[in-house]
Each structure stands twice: as C-alpha cells, then as structure tokens.
Image (cartoon, rainbow, N blue to C red; front, side, top):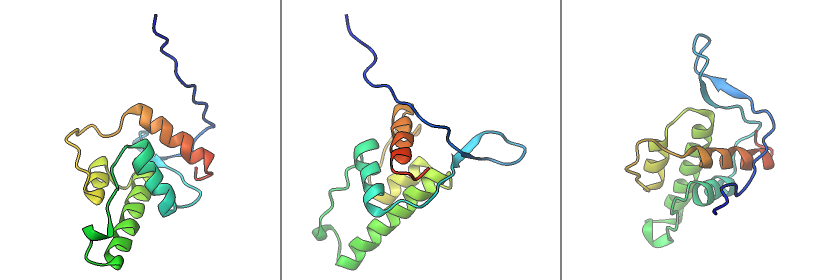
Length: 121
C-alpha cells in the first residue's frame, strides 16, 4: 500500500492583498521586503522548475545578462504581490509554458513556506 503523505507544511498566518474593497479575493501577498536576485532565481529553479541555465554566450554583453537577471527578479516580486501573471514569469525567463493554469497549489504552498522561512512575508 502506498503512503500518500510525504511532507507536512505548517504556515503561520499570511497577510494578503485583496482585489479591491468590494472584492474579497486574494490578489497577492504582503511582503516585508523585495526578493534578492539569488532568492528569485531559487524560486524559479527549485519551486517552479524553470530552466535559467543561460550562459554569457546567450547575451551580447555582460550588461545585457545583468539586465536579464534584474528583470526576472522584478517580475518575480511583482508576481508575489499579484501585479503580474504566470504568463509574465514565462515571458521574462523565455521559459514558455503551454499550461494556462499556471503553478500548482503544491508549488504555491512551497513558495509560501520559502518566503516565510526567509522572512519575506
């Protein structure tokens, strides 16, 4: 017989941003600070399984590569706050996903766990 429970995730209460005063649905998370580039890349690679293995040969200059990492960090911060969508993450990283639904609930729980562990939310 197969055991279904692999890991238990315990989260503290999380403050969320509502859509509007009249719309009670969650838009994003309230953050204490913005992500660093390293933290954003960790989320892309380890939680959402995006392939960010781009080399300097994929860019015309080091400045272009630095701009790429600044842009994907900004996009991830906006995604957490609810200011952009899953498709924006895909476009920013050139990792296109045909699945319009976006991330699974399991990966969203892993994201919340990681953000709490790092003191971001």
